[in-house]
Length: 307
Ligand code: FDA
Image 1 (cartoon, helix red, strand yellow):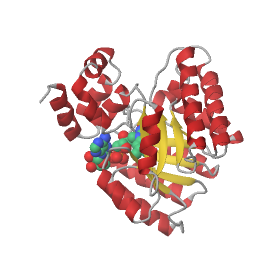
Image 2 (image 1 turned 90 degrees about the vertical axis):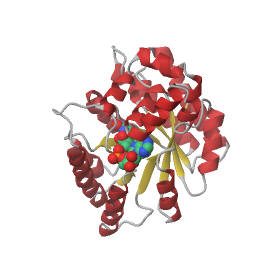
Image 3 (image 1 turned 60 degrees about the vertical axis):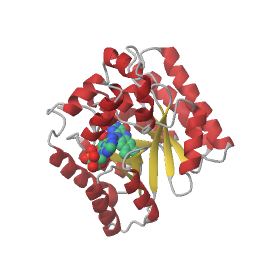
Image 4 (image 1 turned 120 degrees about the vertical axis):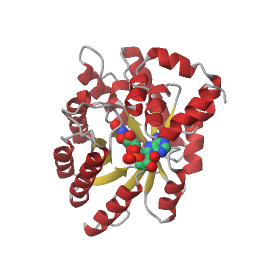
């Protein structure tokens, strides 16, 4: 209920105005986000680099005009040039949301998003790194997977995100594994109907394990994106059973979430990538993070009420 409410609030402009207009919110937001600008992102990449890989997300989603989609492309191109110039392209890649690149435009959205993402993939290749395409709500899944398939023809390092709460995902894991793709498996962060998604947390977790088995035994590169210690242990065991070394897959976690668990994995020599968002459009991302843990909401409410 709480999670659904916060996901609904993430799409409300009235709630957005209240939350964004509360100055004391900044420390709460900063826990999950590098900062507003590209310099903030680069600074945090430098802090994390050493024992962590990074995937940078220039915040923004559900863009409904061409100019803003173009700004998103330019922001990513500038970021990728910086990663190259500062010798950070081995450490950091980028994650993109297709709805920030034109997918939601009423006319030719899919085509525009494909072309815009292609330009980011070209810039990433020139910089010496890769792009992973985030997954948004289920109404976009077919379009997103089709766009990733087109990109894979020219940019085989492109990563795809699959969500274990969707009933279709085992089949998608098998398809993208057969292509040898980089596949980030997460549980899923949107509020989805029972017709397409498991509603029960334990069903989502069981689906996650079924998907992990397909990915670890498959030809692709699994990216295990979860903060769930039980699933992390299962993933490591399945990887070993499938004959994978710690270099043949990676764990991924969100910046600011379960930092001690992140340290523990990095200390064990496991490959860990941190998903690091930056930018001014933090509101929807932040609200989804709040919904993932009731304690985050208490923290947020204290900041909102100035206590
Ligand atoms: P779960 O929610 O069961 O949490 C496991 C443990 O971690 C619990 O103890 C919980 O309290 C703690 N935890 C989880 N989230 C927390 C938070 N925000 N704050 C504090 N503690 C928290 N989703 C999507 O739909 N599309 C996408 O493209 C992506 N991309 C993505 C990339 C990466 C690298 C990660 C790690 C996650 C995503 N997600 C995503 C989000 C994902 O779908 C999911 O919503 C969150 O990761 C939370 O699920 P967990 O697997 O951590 O399990």
